[in-house]
Amino acid sequence: MSGNTPLPIVLYGPAQAPYTEKVRRALLLKRLPFEVQEPASQEDYRRWSPETGLLPALCVGSERIHDSTRILLRLDELFPDPPLLSPDPVIAQQQRQLEDWADESFLWYFSRWVALRKSDEMPTPRALITASPDLLEREQRRSSSLPRRALAWLRAGGTWERPQDALLRGLSDRLGDLANFLGARPFFYSDRLSMADLAVYGMLYTMRNDAIPGSLRSLTGRPSLLEFMRRVEQQTEPHAS
Image: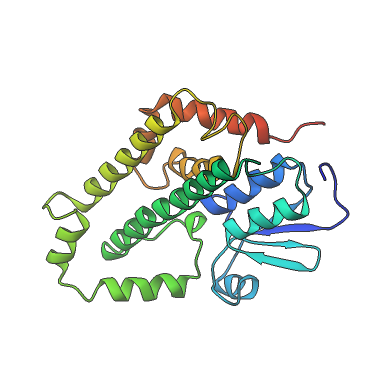
């Protein structure tokens, strides 16, 4: 099915967060009408995602789906046109693996950045918070049990490089990996947009907004990735069918 669906669709999550944007672009690609509701309090995270406290979540009619990967797979079951995975099972598996890598890679860097901000008593921008604040606080308590100097050394990858510099260097390296892997292709693994591309786009989207300060500079040094983002946006921006 493409085009309109009679089932109401509501996407719950911070509008600027990478995983919310990943799902939003999938809905736009499939030309599905939907609305977005952003959390305004910790209670919203618990109410919309009582099992994990994590967003995004998606309601399709009476069905509620959690986790951006599960959401995209379920959307493909309910609304298979256009598909988010290649019909070739080998390519589809590769797309699933890259989608998982993009999600987990960004989450690792973002979690380290949150820990750094908290250690410096700096607030994390609300737009990026995908987990209930109490979950983030528990993660920070686990991190703060190490001596501060040793923790800084570990965060920097075993050097005395400033932790922020080490984090940005790591992000830049991952962008280089992506640019080399994409090569001259319009999308990853295929000439058609897939869930792998949406996951990578969500990661790059947050960096383009410089949500982790300094990440925009790294991204602008990879013009092929900026062109990739433009192609994703061309295929997912709302327009008349």
